[in-house]
Length: 155
Image (spheres, rainbow, N blue to C red):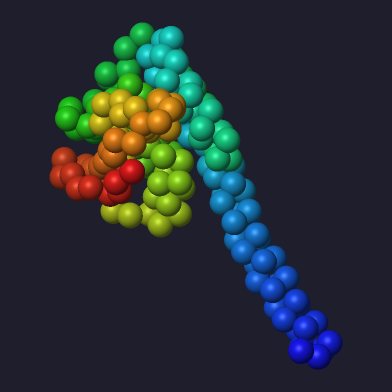
């Protein structure tokens, strides 16, 4: 291979790597522009770990502690069967429980016609639960304002 061909291949590789890094680096920037308000019951540790995972992904998380967040869930329209330990809101969407940061970012970017996402209960593998070695899958459920649900993702 001659020197010009090698130089062109190197430049193409560097350009592709630079573009990939540029695209990857925009995710935290986009997340940081979005504030998430999380309501949690006083003293819940796993909620704080979820907030930490969201912050690590670049989100700006504001926490509101209350002794009972049931009225917040009711007002946000979270179906009973999908409820978990905390309720977060951002961009007009509701994120109930331990929803992975990448799925929050996806919803905020793509604006699907849903009210929000939920991870019902407290699956050990979900962000913020931090169970080492757990491989049991869980579902992330999309829900609409009129109560329809569907599987949005499986983790």
